[in-house]
Image (cartoon, rainbow over all chains, first blue to last red; front, side):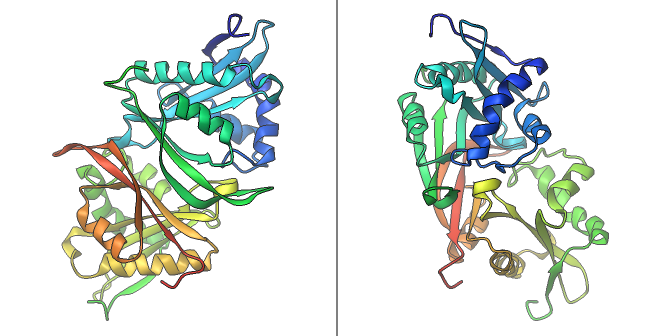
Length: 172
Length: 172
């Protein structure tokens, strides 16, 4: 899989192929602090950044299918704009094949190229243990866990991790 | 001062009287993660919430002048929307007279009324020690400090505190 996988910047025509697996992920309400019933238009505005405000990547498998996506944007504006934030979604039908790891590695690389000094995630659902372990294996640290900050549809109130990784002055 | 102070919901006509002291605070770039050169229109959109998306308060002194303002909005959407976030600005000409403390107490009360379970600040500049001490005295805890996440115009890269306070199940 990894050998045949391509990661490139998203183009507008990619959207329907991304939303196909993004919509069920958001609808499930287990991993994203988005309105589960968000409109396709709002989701698209959240995820596909205008040039200069962020960037969006897609992962494409050997058959040419979009199997994952990531987006990078500044975590804060003005004097906080040197710290990036990023989001990731992988098609559940293609999980466990290294798509997420390949995307996060490319995201770190792209964030460095774009001049960011660090990357921060504000709201990693603590029960999303697969993602937490992946970020940790790539050098992200849990800086804090905000108690009961996420209402999980099955598990009730669970914590949200704030995670962080320096980008400058360290090797990836 | 406290005896003569009124705190009420902001109305649209208040804006010019707020922006008068907000603009220099933002322009100084020492305490807010906003573009210091933000347009008045964008600042207004950030601060004055549409009904249902947040609320904005103003503090009015005995002479009828607006001397401070606060806004409350959800910190995250969807499954994270039960945690509030808030912002505060006090006219520097009226600092040290309890305006900030009165505003934060009213904000906690309003957030409870609006059904929020907790309040989180994502980006409290660590060199803004007066504000940090005020939040702490009112029960906010520093959950984490993101290193070098804020570029201060005089002090260089400084940390941003993530601060948090429960609202439900505790007395204010």
